Length: 266
Image (cartoon, rainbow, N blue to C red; front, side, top):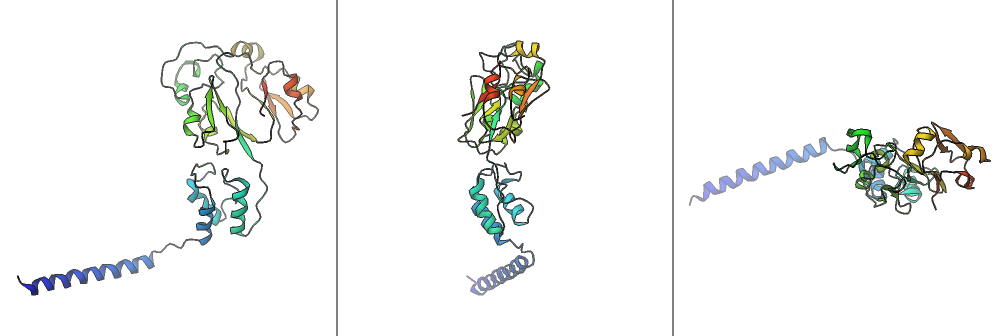
């Protein structure tokens, strides 16, 4: 064996390794991306669900935006006030008071309350039913389809289909908004957590039509409006709407609703 050849090879390989190491070291310094220490602290403070409810691609995206001053310290819907307070401390600011919210499905037309125009045997995905006649088999084509597209996107097991209608578990919901974005009928919205009453119908058809489509549909009769002493209810497109800034949770609207379209949440 020619030991000099082996030694030469080792020297050459070692030299190349040293040169590569020096090059990588210089490149690391030259292209080093400065990371704001606050960003790392904020990321640790965030819950890490990466649900996207904040409007950014995951917790890391939100942490970077907050550190740059592009997002509010209380923008994480999952962490709520507790996380907002910690992040505000990191940023050296005050956390604005936020109203806790919860998802609500504006439909109560169960299998017993609604009728069907035909039997559907296709793909059980609400988002796909926009391609079928009437937007779905239910006579009310503005109500919950009941195939659970909202359920499939919820990371918190906070929404389930019960008797043909999606129902939110308010104790599990973190108001991330995923179900709101997913519902093709736009039936889900975020309402104040302390709201006690809500209009569980989105039907905007005129009374005679809405009555035939669902037993608990709102017909825009206006009794809730006339009996509300706080002017917290109005009718838009034959459907009642509650102004939660004015509502005092008295329950008069629910009591006066002849169609039982306004429900009690807790």
